[in-house]
Image (cartoon, rainbow, N blue to C red; front, side, top):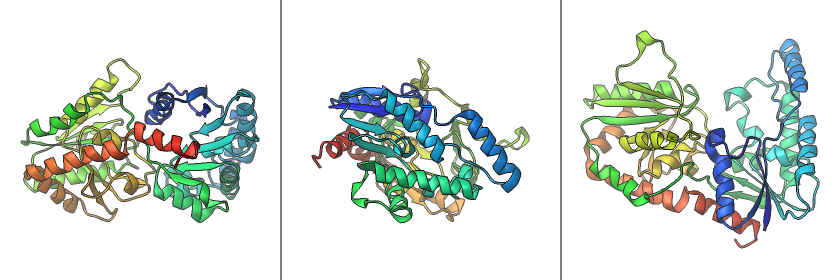
Length: 379
């Protein structure tokens, strides 16, 4: 079966969307599909976007999202339609708006992590939109849902926002969580690493490009609370520079900056950070589908996170981590970490179940296999 695989970025870029586009394409091939890559789709004419963005700011003091616009989506459809081969069986896109106005009898599927309505007033970039932008965004999203044959979301939350906000045949919805955006090898030895770890200093790992949205400040407060509870702590940050001035830099932070997965030893450097940590901790204010949860679990590393957005589909309390409500105080989170850190058998138990959950739910072999069943009507 031949699939036209459509991505907005260059599909081979492991840094784009945390590598999701790359790993989906890779595992589609491994699953036996003949993959036709259609990537680097220009999602809007830049001049058009600048003009409308300027007008919205000037007149309405509001923002304008270029991607979610009728004119833009029709332009995208024109570009994509010209690139699809005649012998293609299925069109798969990693964003719904790429298929809003595609006209074809071929099977159309998107696999994404959010709806436009779900992002509005949830993500910062979607929190000050003009009525014009809101109208267009919801229109092209609704059009996509009615135009495709199958709508696949990576979380129950995303699927629920589609059902709640749009008028379409909900029978076409499926939920398939994403996999792990790391090249996997020696899985068993990865999990075994946790048994040999030293428990003198509690090593926390924060991974994310957006410090504020990912809850970086609260993570620091959790680390400080651990110190007050008598637990020596080290917080390593990967992907972004924490937002504080040098004079207020906590002594327990070790900044690793951004490490590209595209460079020769990039994954090795990232792997080492997971291997050395006791917990992955990100406490987002808003989140669709953080890919780092699966990455952490592939090392048997338990996740500490917030119960917000699509996270609860991926992180199951006491199975592959601990989920806390946004209102939970840093001291309560710290107390839970302290308990696991000081009770090694409980830690090992959670580590082992985290790894098992990765094997059964959060890897691309399982995810793409489930997608294949949906596409080929073998559910």
